[in-house]
Image 1 (cartoon, helix red, strand yellow):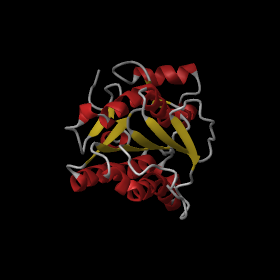
Image 2 (cartoon, rainbow, N blue to C red):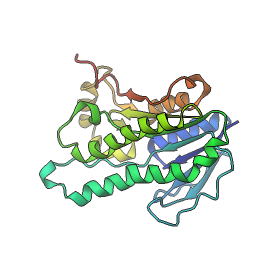
Image 3 (tube, rainbow, N blue to C red):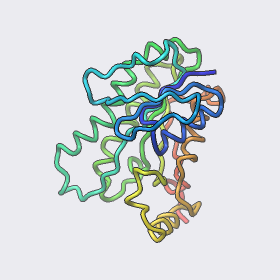
Image 4 (tube, one colour):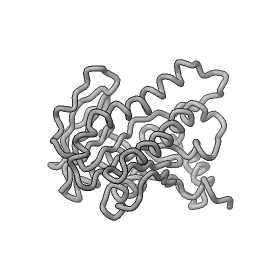
Length: 232
């Protein structure tokens, strides 16, 4: 079975991926920062890690990794004129610099695997263009560029892909879905007429990390209920 590192594995999409991989028999090394959680699965090993600290260490990992999944993100939706440049910088540091730091720290461990993969997360707002999404779309746009550049640089040894969800029912999106009315309004915007779940993203993640996706790299996979491409 494989070893996987999931940064941000204590809730939402990261938590769902951790459970899915663990249930498949893989060893999951999950990190958390603020949302401490006790491991309730024998295959999941949690470690507190603040990726913004210069001294953060990955010495808790084995020498061989089959995959790295980077999940930290933020959803800050505000009018462009009310966003300070520092807010953009903070998002970029969390979502892009953090991913870079993690990947650079463990790349040698990925090279020790025969089927290594890196998985990042974007948003449909990068390609679709949505009002009040400049902050999140800016940093996630950089993630999409990073995905393709890394995929080219590390082919054929390491595959790199990215999932771009639409609005997903997770703790991060709770302010946007904190009533049945909000959930219904947002569900109706999607051709498939429902909100995405963390398990929807975990299903795609498990596939992209597996041998079944061995001929897929450098791709931005839209898991979004059809909203980014369909008009109904």
